[in-house]
Length: 178
Image (cartoon, rainbow, N blue to C red; front, side, top):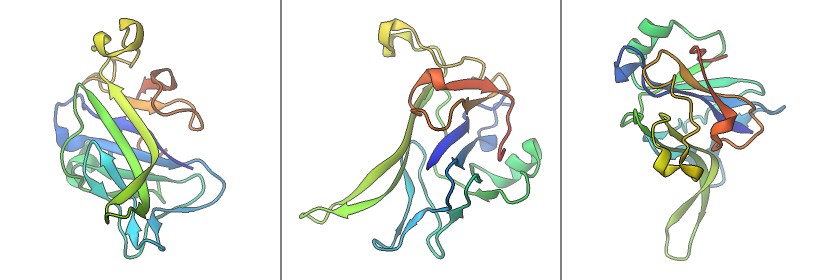
């Protein structure tokens, strides 16, 4: 399965062009982010706007990573080149919210009887900067605060566990592509 594994939503420099989203295929088989039956690529359906390449479709190898960056030059200047074999894509439209938002990775689904295309959620993260207790159960916002311009990214702790659980995310030194 492919999941959202790291989010740099508020770089320490304040330069939104250094934002990135990391995807990780933690499964044992390659995953192509393209549905050949529907003729459509996967995309982010909430948060930033990005449609993955479709000619040919992008394949993430088993255990592999893909980075979607806001701006390639700003990304490389801040973080350097990722490890060999890691694909860098972008730019995406929009910016990651510094206070939090919902990111949703989806694959194409069927068309309903009205001609409306549906997308099937692959993974979702409704992250926060940790300062919104009123939006959280028990009025406690459990998202790490150190990722909010503190030089750290949100990093998923256990890939196989639910992505929308703040207990499954930590603030860690940026490690895009690994």
